[in-house]
Amino acid sequence: MPPADDTQEPRSRRERPAKPALTRQGIIDTALGILRDEGLEKVTMRRVAAALDSGHASLYVYVRNTEDLHAQILDVLLGELRPSVTGPGTWRDRVKGLLSGYGQLLMRYPGIARMALSTQPSGPNYLALVDTVLALLQEGGAHDRAAAWGVDLLLLFPTAVAVEFSAPAAKTEKAAALSALATKITTVDAARYPHIAPLSAALVSGDGGSRGDWAFDVLLDGILAANPPPAPEQDLP
Image (cartoon, rainbow, N blue to C red; front, side, top):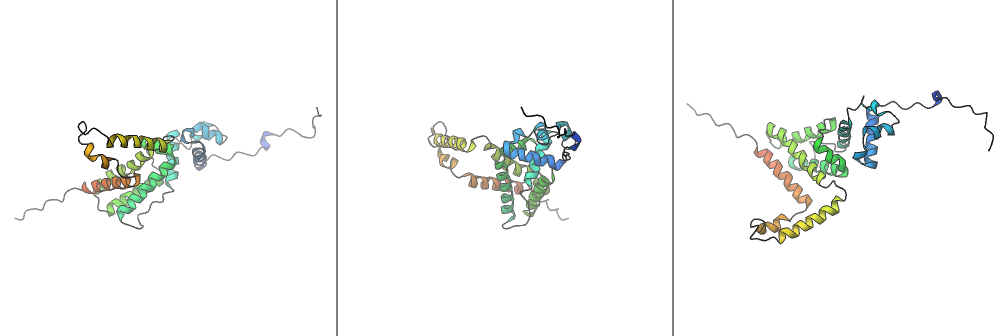
């Protein structure tokens, strides 16, 4: 066994590099890295604190709880959308393009999609998305209350679709389930299901893109149709 090197003195803890100070942005950036590498279920206060070499109690100065942390992650991701009222196409085209982009973003982060159904974000990027959708609805002639209530429905639809496809191996399992359902529908007993049988071809027609575009049109048409009727003209004396 070699003799101990007496020339090296023990290093004092005070000589070690100081840890970077905790910041709200640093916490969110670390959480985003864990999300991309390990999934949302691993984004906990303890896991983030461990990655930052800190105690998890210290994080509560900057983040209320895990739900708040997840909501802030979603808001950061929404910054990728860069919503704008201006652009090519009609106001309806721009609404559908923006909401389709929102749905595609959620598709890339399945855990975030599921979380978005139960956690209400309120960060600047979410508010910018809502503000842009409201502006486009008003450009299309929607009444104030119809636009205000309709924006929730418009955001809920792509969120729900993203959640539907967010389970592990969802694409293959969903394709197999839809294929089995289509077979059942097209071979249904007309006597037992008299309304399904004549519409069997229509029920299984269209792809995800065409059905999604149609769904947005239905929602937008409904929002416009919800405008209050014009006030009746006063009878002249």
